[in-house]
Amino acid sequence: MTDLSRAAAPPIAMSRRSPAALSRALVIGLTAFLTLVDLFATQAILPSLVEAYGVSPAAMGLAVNASTVGMAVSGLAVAAFGRHIDRRRGIAVSLALLALPTFLLAAAPDLGTFAALRVVQGLLMSAAFTLTLAYLGEHFSAEDAAGVFAAYVTGNVASNLIGRMMAAALADHLGLAASFHVFALLNLAGAVLVRIGLDRATPMEATDGGRRSVLEVWGDHLRNSALRGAFAVGFLILFAFIGTFTYVNFVLVAPPFGVGMMTLGVVYLVFAPSVVTTPLAGRAVRLVGPQRTLMLSLLGAVAGLPLLLAGRLEAVLAGLVLVAVGTFLAQATATGFVGRTAMRERGAASGLYLAFYFLGGLAGSAAVGQVFVRLGWAACVATIGLSLLAAAAIAARLGRIAR
Image 1 (cartoon, rainbow, N blue to C red):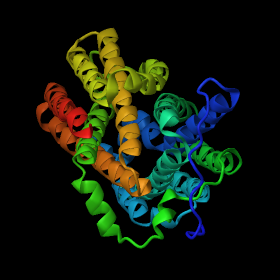
Image 2 (cartoon, rainbow, N blue to C red):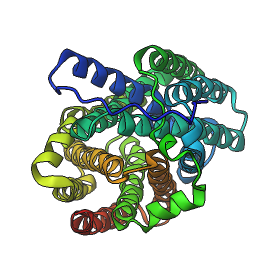
Image 3 (cartoon, helix red, strand yellow):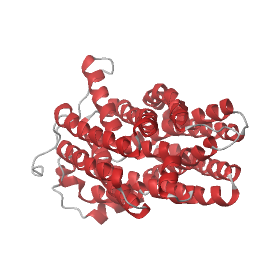
């Protein structure tokens, strides 16, 4: 626990081109990678899990994405109690504990146990995620905030790309159990990295002595129309992302594509361009503002959706690239916007944002899964398109209400 009687240290300002800034960005990106690598890697082995547990794609998709339930709950918990938690210690402990449910997934006897362990994973991943966002908002100057948040989301992009490819390769060559064992070791590596790579930071919320109640803090954030808009955009971003990248797996392994498990892992090179484009979010926000950056990112993702219905693999992959680039740019922009807009109680604001964000992922998994089973892939793509257009419409107003 931190000593709440002490004021927080002032945010760090640094040249974005200095060796210290580059080193810090690398640590931030690796922390993000090792925090969320379990979240998306399991989606790459969905077809194998469906076969192993003998269930429908919708049932397995919901179980795999049950982690979003834990992430939403944990986001709210950290929003409520994060003011009392030492950021670095909380992140490290969360990642160390995350290794346990990850390891146990290798021996989950049934779908219910599997889903429960995914919920526990979500609780711990979200705790680390939310505390890291609060740490970044408190520890860096407003000038550097967009860049460090973009570095963090870039790490998330890498976790999507490398995590999925690793999971598919490990499951194909060594089996499902080995895949979960390796990812448990990555969780422990994340805990070690945070302990040695991040500076200790006292929460900025300490400046008010912690006298305000949680409901008062939440009420302040929810009455802020700019933050409400960002929360809604976050919900819709992950709705679309989870809906796309969960169920496209079943499209790719079925005719006419017939992609095998190892090749399916390689397919996730569609995230590679996002590793390059996501760090540009900070620069784009400085040049054109968060409103236009969000709108252009979301509309870029929409442009990729018609390609997902093509009968040629290269067209589908191009569509997935556009969806990934657009949603990751939008996520980086929205995350940084929340960090800059919440002038106090940033841990609570980040927690609320992530609660909405991950609830959107759960809604996307459930809703798009049912659409997939009942109406097919084309109806799924239409549903995803509506969610992205709704997010763009909210973003169009976000710039006006934030000024």
